[in-house]
Length: 261
Image (cartoon, rainbow, N blue to C red; front, side, top):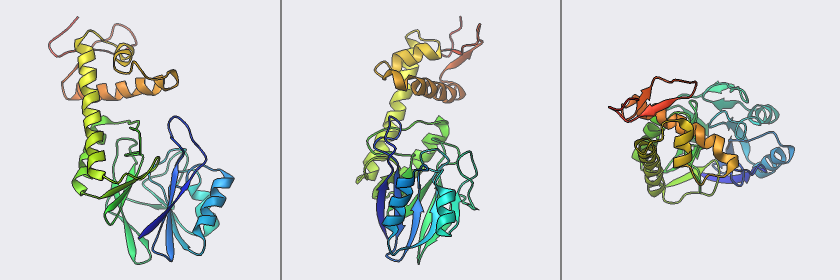
């Protein structure tokens, strides 16, 4: 199997250089993975990259605005079905894909792996010894998550695959898959240690913990950092590593186990 990467012109603080659209092909047939946002020039670039390849499907890793919106109109234009885990705001698949399902590319197959954490509907796609990771793992950056427990489980699942290379939804191809996944796991563990240390040091609110753990985050990313603290707190509280205090106001307050105001 081969692939062609077409970079969407949507760079930004959460997308890096832009969304990677992949044409995964066997020399004759191609699946288009993560066509990205609805941008006319990007749609034209995808169709130009197809060349003489016969489109077989348009596939989406997850329903985010930088990955999914072009899928339905592009699939309709090419006369093929769109595939994804579930319908959402920006995309409604013609064919839903569950964990372990396969999508044909000529005589080869993409194997879907349900990897929730970044989003509940996130899929990675295994092709031989390569894994197309969407936003589960990105090149040159960590990712925003909505469920820390599910994300850890998905990371450990990917680690157990033993794949050689990762092809992310943003950033460059990652040649050493094992090292990248291990670094992602360690980063998440370190963030948990930092959150617990911040609470042990006297930070009891989401704002206080955010200021302690994400002190160097630029102002435009502060809201995202705050959301990440809330996600991490949910996991730590569920594991009884932190205690949810009865709030005296609308703001969440936490403490170390055994401590009460």
